[in-house]
Amino acid sequence: MVSTSAKPENHQDGLLADDTTPKARSAALKRLAPDFGENTSQGSESPSKRSRSTTRQLVRQVRRFAAGFETVPQELRVSLEETYTEDLDLAQNVVYTPDSERARLGDDLAIREVACICRQARGCQQRNENEAAWNSHVHGPILSLVGELSCHRSEIGSTNVTTARLNPRFKPAIELTQPPLCGKVIDFVFFLEPSNVTERAFGDLAWETNHGHDFNHTLYGPIANRPIVISMETKREGEGQATGRAQLEIWVAAHFNRLQEIACDGSKELPFLPLLLTQGPVWSLLFAHRQREGQAWVTIIYEKVTLGDVTTPSGVFKVVSSLLLLMHWAQAEFRPWFEQICTAKCGLNVNVYH
Image (cartoon, rainbow, N blue to C red):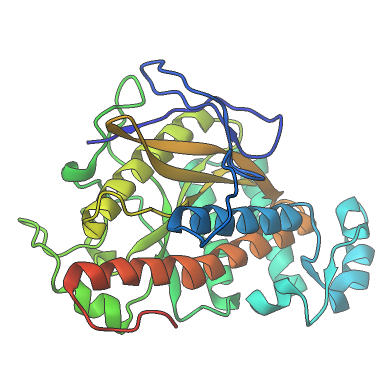
């Protein structure tokens, strides 16, 4: 089994991570952006460099959306400014045009949809609702809405996985919390809808006793044939950030264990995996990476980018734009990689790039 690294908060510069395990082993500070601490040498692009380059581009665009740039449809700006005079972020350079990056990611949000999200989030905030209520009234509806807006709505899905349990075979060797976590691990995931390649590969997976075939690191049958891409943990406002981080770290370490098993080749570069963490109305994005340190594989969690606060209209536009971007990454980057390792694993003679 591999170890996983627990990281303290660091807000000095974007996505920072102190590479420290629960056993207090420390290493040099690592940065996700702009260059992940790697030198760029001449020559052909290795899988590792491609993964890091793609993630740098993703982070750069997420930061633009999180700052509000190009998140609001041009035709809605005047109405929004007149209706939400207290939301000063809407007075900034927030609009996008039909030829912008945001427009290519999916359909526009409607004012009524934005108002509904804000109203539900403010209600949960005022009532000091628990995590389940936030999931039911705010987070789940946002994910469903984003799924309908996305240009990849038929290719990438999301679902609530609060009843999912880790497959013990893939659970990391080091428990990050004292006492150890039990029961629910995380709340939501984005997954790949089946393709010809994954459908053929699914039947060739090893049979899990009392479970069956499964692409994932869980015992959750409803999405066994739908590979998990992005994972999300939610907490009520003002509580549980450290626990939420630990749950994501355990979950993604198990996810990497499963991906390494499917890939077969221990030298195969695994992609960076996006992780979402919410505290009440505030959404944040982290990234996880698997790398070798000596004889051990270590999971590195890179520090968060705050995407937005969905009690405000500008925050809703920021979060929705970022989620649409992540869905595009899942389809354009993760799917080809996953289908390639499935092809290599199962010996399929299929062109997996779309």
